[in-house]
Length: 164
Image (cartoon, rainbow, N blue to C red):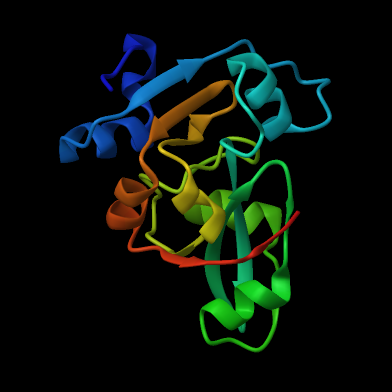
């Protein structure tokens, strides 16, 4: 895989990923603000299965912000997430806090290139894919890379945290 889009060069996720030398591809599409789901919109626009496109959710596990990366075809199991990081209780983080901490806007939060590196959990289903797509740091832009590279770059834990 090689970087396709010059317009993507400015996002912190793309800059961080480029610096590592890890192979990846970017996919840009026209974001429709009226679409009810950012992730499903991405899968439709790229013509790939929603099981290959992953959404990045910022959560609060026992007072610690934690990133959960799950397929757009499912939803996050908060109890499973808490368990995966040795916590007791998980909830979705305050949206304004998520944006401030990561440096990204909702619908464009990437697990890469965040303002503050947060502990990350990637749903175990990713390991069954050759590549997965995650946000590149803005709505309408995705990064495609191997799940192993995403785990390595984010220090993520692989765990079954998605409900199908």
